[in-house]
Amino acid sequence: MDNRGMHLDASKWEAEVATLWGDEELDDQERLERMRSLADRAPHPALGAFELGGAFDSSGHEAEADVQYAAATRAGLAEIDPARAAQLAIQHASTLRNLGRVDEAIAMLRDAPRHPAAGDAPAVFLALALHSAGRSAEALRVALEAIEPGLPRYHRSVRAYAAALTDPPEGSGRLDA
Image (tube, rainbow, N blue to C red; front, side, top):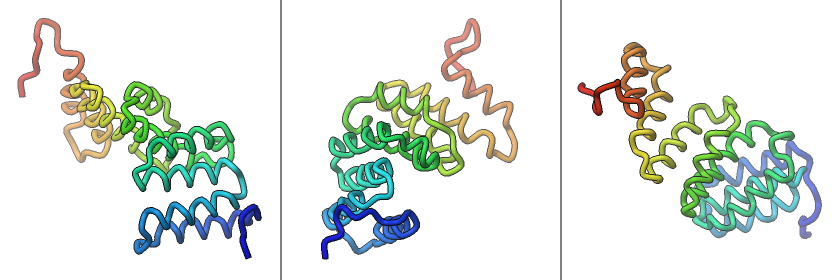
């Protein structure tokens, strides 16, 4: 029996999605086809679009991922699943960067919602996008500022060195180590 069009209850759907992502033996095409079926049966269209976007993304189909990620946003993913919405911002921005739409990626990452499910990943991907935009000093600053809170010491020094990457001390164009 074809299950397309029949929505699964949320817990069953979540379990099937987790199983699909956890199956290391599937090739990209098979995962994509199975995700299409799951997306069609998602308990909410935003959830299906997000997961299908991820399947397109992980299989190297960035243009199709972009369409699905945008659909997930329009369908209200942020309202129904804040953790996935935080992941969406990272994944969609990464896709935009891969499509050469770096400025859009940077803006999306700067505005990315904060959620424990994403941790410091928005800053990491922002650093990558800034680097892709040729803004390496700013990228390094973002990366340093993201890791500084987790350092066992040297907080003040790292913050000062990071700031100096984009705001050099008055009268000096460089920072001596």
